[in-house]
Image 1 (tube, rainbow, N blue to C red):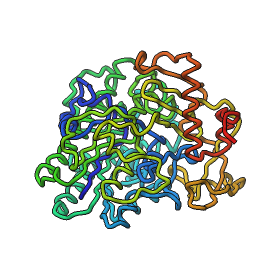
Image 2 (tube, helix red, strand yellow):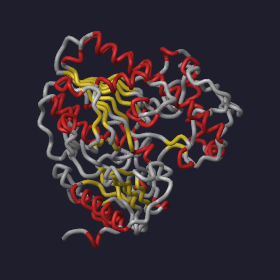
Image 3 (cartoon, rainbow, N blue to C red):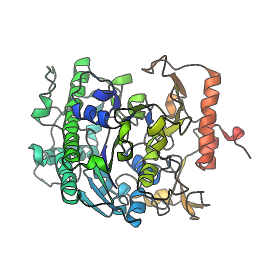
Image 4 (tube, helix red, strand yellow):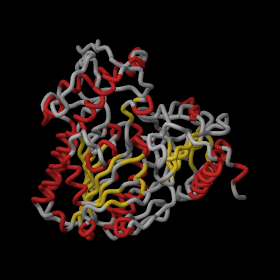
Length: 504
């Protein structure tokens, strides 16, 4: 048996044809939907990029204990379990966060790996003569450009783009070339797992003229002023600019679709549909002006961010082709699904469930999905309602529990570690005590928005927070229940206002 995962970053479910979008051009996602099971209620877990990838490996929610960071020494890793069990695992990726301090332990869990460079200010090409002097169409980005680290990232990205001026040189193209090369070389062999992972369509929405031509329109502003890279901030631009940014995203989305088509073509060519599982997924979505926001992290986790696309083709279930399933599933379910496919034992610390029963009969595997950022609102949905619970006692700090003290791009500073304590083991740390470090800077802290409740049936655009104390109480009970199951830190129960409800 073999398996291929094609993973995207910031792929919007509602902008794909198979999920009902009528203006983007994504025929290969539609082609995939006709061949596979399409999941209608897939939700994120831990946000954003690396917390989501930790879930992909470990099959468990991690945002209660940790923010952005590497795999921990006690973590179960799906690719490593497969590797130790005799399944060859190979990663090809242009996701630059793997090569930074905060993601440095992921890629070596695979049997082998390849990288392609150049995405989003990746520290790649050097041109010391370059001077960044571009402006911006985004009002809330003007201040950000005054900060040297942010300006350096923008400058690095501009230099990188100068080396990706043709289709075959772009990061996504190189990544898929490497993935297809693996399939070409190894399609006749057995027992392998290939993960083709591209950073696209994450911002910046860099695409070339061929893809932009799919969405002809008139932009009234200065298109040269990096209109393909919105900030994580409130929208302060006119509707014309908002629409232009959406077209920039759509152009990159259509490029993603074209390269997905190359994988499907090779599945056809080598009859891999007979014995190869295919999973196509993403980590989260992205706001393109909806709710008055650009991006993620700075605002509540609305449906455009949390409700993600997922497709799975299982060669043992060819009769499921074209079927849609409505059970609530999450990223944490992918690791156990792959382990079950290869006949491997699923570690007891994995909270996710294999999706075989969902694919066969839409059998529910959970009542609700919990998701969020470390130290921020804790969100839960039962498919009808989405509740975003803010800390009732935000003065109580959230702490990082880790043996790998790194942030996204740098290690913890000595002053962050001076007050570090050793905490007792959690249920999943394999007997290890871990560092307890007070977290002072929460990526995605949306506590200031308060607690919000939305009825997705009556208010699918999440425009009006609902005042229904009975529903709120039930959703809060779900969060508390999951925190107990997840062995969440005790101080979080106090921070969120659940201490008095916590069983002794």
